[in-house]
Length: 68
Image 1 (cartoon, rainbow, N blue to C red):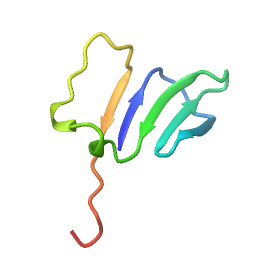
Image 2 (image 1 turned 90 degrees about the vertical axis):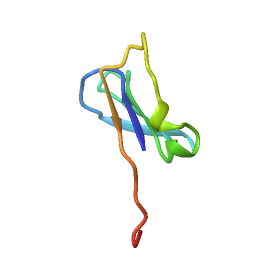
Image 3 (image 1 turned 180 degrees about the vertical axis):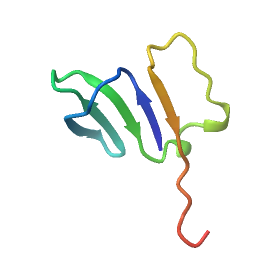
Image 4 (image 1 turned 120 degrees about the horizontal axis):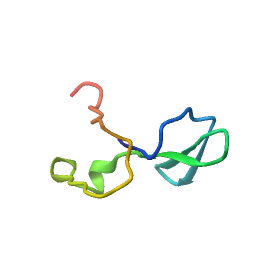
């Protein structure tokens, strides 16, 4: 999962805009975060480079299948 925090705040609502892509909204209906499930199937997270993006916080996590 890749979570991109665009602004600080508390998510009061979430909406899945595409399969596996969820937007988090604050109380003013502003997007404060983007969650991309199974991001590693689309992006090589080990080589992810960011520059000049308005990102407050970036959280990368890898889900390990049960029994692996």
